[in-house]
Image (cartoon, rainbow, N blue to C red):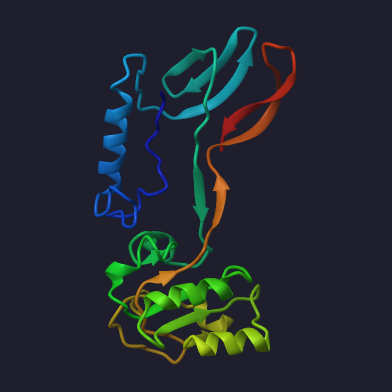
Length: 226
């Protein structure tokens, strides 16, 4: 088994809502999983990043930073990468004060003020879910050019006590405006607790780059780390 340790949950401090692991750190969960796998005598674990894969007449060759490794069969478990909006200051707060899943990071926020970044039309419904985890009337939906609520949706948001901030309001997030108990410094800054958004999830790790053939002679593609 080759593992580069680049897990999607590595940005958070503790896991919540994961049955049997509530309150555990991502590192603890990964270490337990590794220990369970290594119980099997046929497993060898290597902490390495796979750079590329290619087929041969007898199987596959796996390229890593330390060299080539051969395998007769492969299980590619790359996971996904969350792609957040390109808003200054957001990436470094991911998993700390910017979250995706309200069920994973909701209860411990103690029903405080929450903000939701609109990333698609589905964000209208997502904001209504997030509002269930905030104090009444303490959720703000920050719009962008991709999301323009209809009059019916505005009525629904209002019924849930969700405030609306137009596009220009989210272009200057400002570190102070992104934290609980931080008073607004300018009219377009809002004091709120953690922000939430539903990021685009992309398959991690590989892209097709070159033709190859497997042992049966069928055409395929080489895979290279991106």
